[in-house]
Length: 188
Image (cartoon, rainbow, N blue to C red; front, side):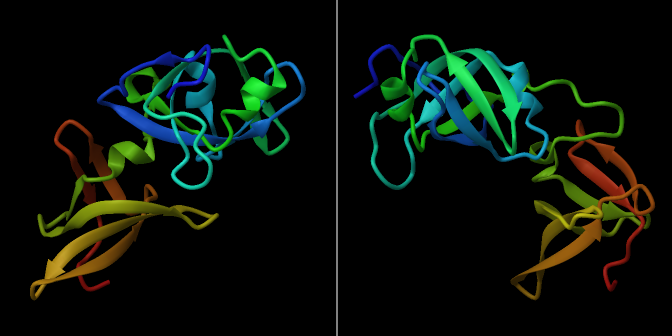
């Protein structure tokens, strides 16, 4: 079941979840979005969002819906957006809880020495001596800096190691080779 006015679609192979629709905003079909990033540039740069139903709670549609975005902008601590074929409050309310996905290819180009977290997950981390330290499983924002969290095996058991993702410790990020070189020792 798709919502009236929404186009059924297939999720792109490079789709990344970037937020979710919180609720309707106003009476003209606008809706409030809770972005997963503090800097939601991907939401602003893409004019095509893909929606999947909420993982929990009421599901007002099933499958994948393609949403053509007319406008998205910052509003307080959230983002508000309007879309083609979502013309009133009732239509916007029907989107409540939907998860928003955007094709990775439509993300804005990162500046030199800037990276999207999603691109770092899965990269192997080695130190200057060539010792494998693990594979990036997630990143943590500690306020002052971002920290790479890596999984590695020790005596058949999965362990975690953390390295601050700052220039002092990170020598090189090579996305093409899927490798990060750091100045870090396994016993730190």
